[in-house]
Image 1 (cartoon, rainbow, N blue to C red):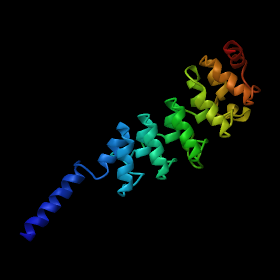
Image 2 (image 1 turned 90 degrees about the vertical axis):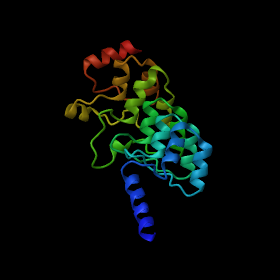
Image 3 (image 1 turned 30 degrees about the vertical axis):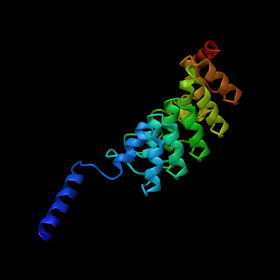
Image 4 (image 1 turned 90 degrees about the horizontal axis):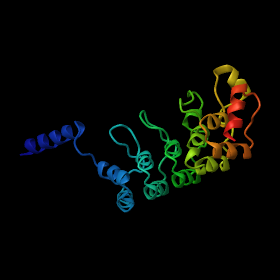
Length: 212
């Protein structure tokens, strides 16, 4: 009987590793669905706030992806990592900016999420999407609120750009990115924040003028 019980337990473990239900699955589903009450219950019962799904994405990343503001707040109260990144998903703050979710962006910034973004950490290459300010500037066609929140949190209105960087890798500043995309409101917000206009090629200046 003891042998059979041990064999059954081992088989259950193998099934779990092969794709069966895991203890954190209910928690992650609740984060995706926005069931903040259940998320809080499971956290109180001992569930880690930094639990990840089978792809390595964290509960906070999932809550941000599905725009579950109340779940984000519950997770932040439980000290979920605001800088967590995974292979297939950006940091929670970048997700919030990309999806134009000012409530989530505000909550993450209040929890000390870095406005420099995970791509700006030492030893990491810059994201193909650019800096968080670059991304927010492009979302200005719908709302500039996320851009304003980043700038209020001391993000540079020039992103990672400088005249020197332009010569080196042809990077464009957020001001030019917004102008070229026709995001007039973003252009105005960036100018008000002191974004630089010097060092632009002639075509960028022309398009900037058209944008205004």
